[in-house]
Image 1 (tube, rainbow, N blue to C red):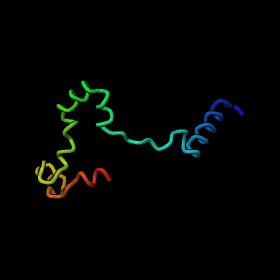
Image 2 (image 1 turned 60 degrees about the vertical axis):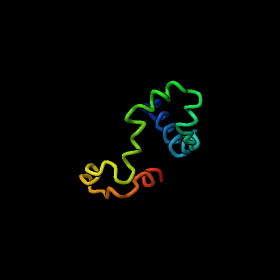
Image 3 (image 1 turned 90 degrees about the vertical axis):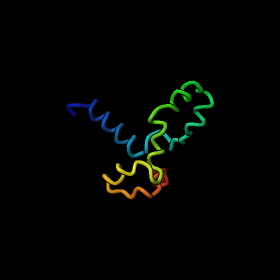
Length: 83
């Protein structure tokens, strides 16, 4: 064996991959849970475009962009994004 460290690392990586890693499925807590402790950050975040991004998925919003993307602008895309 010319590269024992390489083989050892490969074995560890393979084991981690096959075992699914040590992390269980993380639960998404959401904005409300975080905001309860991080009030000033949440207040600042609410003013950003990122905070309002899901609004563009609502029916009849951003219709030009949806038509350019060949999407039906009357459909509710929030349901599709969440599921």
